[in-house]
Length: 368
Image (cartoon, rainbow, N blue to C red; front, side, top):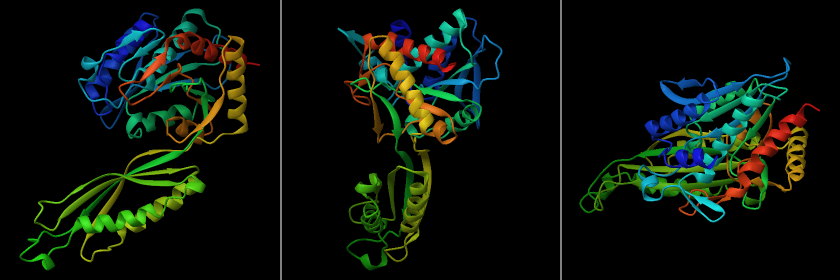
């Protein structure tokens, strides 16, 4: 497991680094080939956005497939793996994306390989490995939806929380890009002839901030801004990236309308704005069925001498896609780790095998 993980971590695979992600796919394909598991490649609009493998049921049942899911992209820039490659220090392993979530995809690969070699599954098992979760799954969401509509149960192997918890609920998120167009003019000689896109953006940000309601768990954050031509010119252009987080799809519809209304309004006469959604995660809403799945997983892990509580996360993941389509889903079933998206990202090496065994045991117990 650690050998495969080291290979995966040492491949740069930023969400926009398509050749790097394909190299991760190829390394996984080579692993599955040793178990004579054929790999299917998937594309969306010319982009190779996922690979999948299927392990047939040993009992010829009509049970819905069980989906083991994970993303192969990371947030780190190209060249990061050369600066700080995979390392193991004591009981922890480090490296770019080691927790989020290359340990999870390595773990899923071994679970699939074990069932392919030894059998025992009462339902078909499908492994799905995708390319762009870190930027909102703009291309992979389509293939995830395709598999989710057929699946009954989903294990999304995002990293287990640092205390061993899994995630049984998540916020949804919508990511917007806002562009504002004004008119350039010399700021000293003819300021009145100018129309400042930066002034318009500043006024829009004030209105956007008013939409945040911490008591309801709704947050609107303008995380990136840019614009202008020069210090002595009224800004002909400005740009902002906006992050919306919500609990429910109803909140999503309401807030998207309100953000759109702010974008369409002109607080500085003469400005024009364009708003587009560049990425989106649906909320992962806990259900009685998903709670039962969590309890089955928790009990399976406890049988192995380990524990896993549950928690809600304000972060988004592809588990929101599967749960919104009716799949019984549990998230963060990967090896235990911490500090994702930072140079100190790590996994607890001793959690690798028991977390894999817990999913395998849960799959076996689902038959009952």
